Image (cartoon, rainbow, N blue to C red):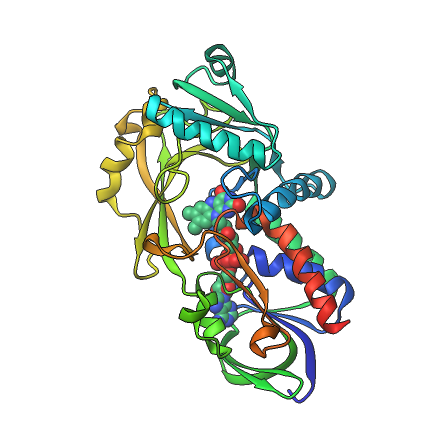
Amino acid sequence: MSEIIDIAIIGAGVVGLAIASEVSRKHRDVYLLEKNDTFGQEQSSRSSEVIHAGIYYSPDSLKTRFCIEGNRLLYEMGDKHGIPCIRCGKIFIAGDDEEAEILDGLYYNGINNGLPLKMLSQEELHKKEPYVKGMTAFFSPTSGIVDSHALMRYFVLKARENEARLVYRAEVTGIEKIHDGYRLQVEYPDGEDFLDTKVVINCGGIYSDRIAELGGIDIDSAGYRLFLTKGEFYSVGGGKNRMINTLVYPTPQNLGPGIHVCLDVEKRLRLGPLFNYVDQVDHSVDESNRSIFEASTIMKSLPFITPEDIAPESAGIMGVLYGHGQGVNDFIIRHEDARGLSGFINLIGIDSPGLTASPAIGRYVAEMVDEILG
Ligand SMILES: Cc1cc2nc3c(=O)[nH]c(=O)nc-3n(C[C@H](O)[C@H](O)[C@H](O)COP(=O)(O)OP(=O)(O)OC[C@H]3O[C@@H](n4cnc5c(N)ncnc54)[C@H](O)[C@@H]3O)c2cc1C
């Protein structure tokens, strides 16, 4: 191709799709390049599908900002465009005094973030979820569930309506700075080609650090190196997978929220994810972790589920910036003009709550692009 296009987005997960649907409202010549056969084959189709409220993160973080805005937008989009979203709420549980203290801290962090949380008495807990046990609990009414596939299909539809081009089996393997933009080297099944673009938006998920590196950024000094964490889910059988109506979370653990109740939009119950750092991408479930599920605090809160009821189900892998006690627990969304890379936008470390935040991130990045292209 000899002409230069306006915008190339790398990666058709929920974040790249949300951005494509937003930037293509105003700009023509938007290409979304995806290495897989279709959209949403990686993190975005392997999540817990929870619409988070924005309780966990510090008030000044991008995670809090985009989670709260994304939460509102998702319910609005659900109502307006028929994307299945359920505002079922979430109960946070503490089982003993030590957990109750941690839960208190979480509650006040959420209140500080402006959320309408409510402490529950034993009676209120029992009324909401008769089969759930806990010493203290609070309720988050704005938490819920979204059908992530329906959400992605909606973004695809919007992007196509706006004439964005979604190109599958197109892996970006090189990025070279040229006079008025970037030359992308792209591997297609039938060979290699080049695409010149004024703006590059890196939404490569767990590979986004490598894509930044292709653009010439030293990812270690920039603090962009990602660590992989695998989250494993267990299904709940034995006729017990419809006994809960609300998301139920334990007191937060070292690596994330801890194994919790996941419900899909049909209210089918499963447990997870159990997160562990991994070195490679392998979505199999390690059966030796079964004992950790059996001994988990969430199982203590759900005494009606016995070890025989649970079975390994699926796993998803996130790329996080906070590996092994280092790094930061926030999103990086940055126009790299200060590095001399005008028109290069990186999105790195878009781990949870990235699904919830996606519509808000789409709008934010579209504003960045407007500033660049005018
Ligand atoms: C187990 C688990 C549970 C989670 N639970 C929740 C939850 O309940 N709620 C929530 O809000 N969030 C949750 N998340 C986080 C959420 O899933 C992610 O934040 C979100 O899906 C990130 O979307 P993405 O588009 O950035 O990444 P991805 O979905 O991974 O998409 C990135 C895309 O880039 C493509 N790509 C990469 N490199 C290239 C290249 N060189 N060329 C072309 N294409 C490329 C990939 O093929 C992929 O399709 C969870 C994640 C996991 C793993």
